[in-house]
Amino acid sequence: MIVARVFVVLSAVALAAAVAAAQETGQQAAQDGVRSRVAEALAAIDEKRIEADVRTLVGFGTRHVLSRTDSDTEGTGAARKWLRAQFEQLAAGCDGRLLVSTQTEKVPCRRSGMPPEVEVVNVVATLRGTSDPERIYVVGGHYDSRNGDGADGVGVAPGAVDDASGTALVLEACRVLSRRALPATILFVAYDGEEQGLLGSQAHAAALAAADAKVDGMITCDIVGNTRGMDGERYDGHVRCFSYAPVGNDSFGRSLARAVTYAARTHVPEFAVKLIFRGDRYGRGGDHRSFFDRGYPAVRLTEPREDFSRQHQNLTERDGKPYGDLPDYADFAYTANVARVVVATLAELASAPPPPLVGTAQLARDAYDTQLVFELPAGVNDFEFVWRETTEPDWTHVVPAAQAEVRRANSGRNLATLRGVCLDDVVVGVRTIGGDGSRSRVATPPEPERFLQRPRGEGEEGGR
Ligand SMILES: [Zn+2]
Image (cartoon, rainbow, N blue to C red):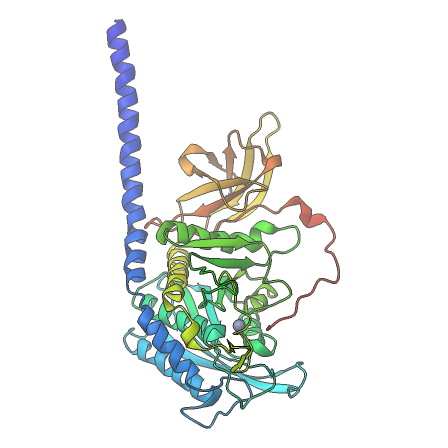
């Protein structure tokens, strides 16, 4: 009897193990769906094309907002004509899924020495989503440049790293992603007027907000090409990811940054993303700010150690040291690695279902369990929970849906109980999972600090 009983118990254990293994295999197969597609896209990224594009952009002499627009070889007009032609060439092979447009607007400019109003022209390539086209991801670099005099529209301003590198990255991301069918929409944008106060991105974010566009994330790639620090050291193993966060809600503002680290760890493990919990470099700004100001999650990717003898400088030599932002100082293999992070992030997010809607969270009354109320987007059944200590920068724990107790409330919402997760000490969130294993951004309940007063007087300058 006893022997038989032991046998039964063992069989049950074996059966459970077999079921778990089968589930894991199934999950693994699903994971491989997005993994193999992203791997294919990453393998197609070509640093030689990035280099050629940076050199072409530099070859226009200057891309300053006030530079000439009547030439095909010089000035900002030539630069945007060329950019548009590159996107159109890609669109020709995309069965109408990639649409190229320009956004032209006269906008006020407050920079000293500049006219009170300037015209900005953004070049936009829209890769329309196949099943959820209303959900939008934006990736941008700014093609305008400047030299030591911010109002000089004539003198040479190569802007190789700032920001032909980011613009070329966006073009390369469009090349490899436009060949693929993705559920959500991606906008690839070459922004104008960043150096004059984020003018192009402000116009774009304003137009999207006015159209009530559902932008689930914006990534600006700005200064992503130099790896030689001013200390002579080489810094090529990681990229910095800056993210704004509304006061008292670190999780909403930074969920996109944590989606970037997730995509990098999953698809580009040989290259790191350093989270920086600050909107931008100290006292500086970039195009993601325009999107944050409209309530959209937005991050900035920038090389680890900028060389300030390059940016916004006239081409010159002082005490034997060269100044100016020339392509010969850029590291195109590095820019290609940042492009891999960007492509992995966009492919992951645009493949995944939309993030869930999280209502409230509370600690259970009689146990150290977290209860979370959330809604899944229509037709989405697969999801998982994540949590971290409040002091941890990134998610440290994943709780599969099967390990949480999830029940449907009368309202149609879901109530999940995470056993042993003490909400007082941690941040919890939930993300959706696509049929191919792709993960959405993590949605989190509001932090209690949202009730506190927002401090006055915070402000950062843009476009420097
Ligand atoms: Zn820049």
